[in-house]
Image 1 (cartoon, rainbow, N blue to C red):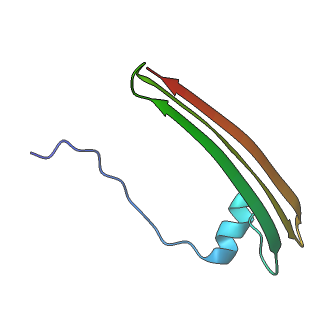
Image 2 (cartoon, rainbow, N blue to C red):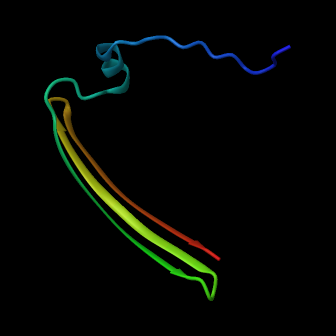
Length: 75
């Protein structure tokens, strides 16, 4: 007996998806940038990382902007 949960999937058109998700139908323009830094020292057993990015998108529906930073330290 298979006890794994069953999930039903369905196809959805791009037009319907844009209506549900607020997508960017029609022409759109965008730009983005990302940067990162990674430092590792094996003697001390320290790993550190820092990164980030930015994006901008313009469409008939409006303007969307994204700015994110992420950091991680592990020993």
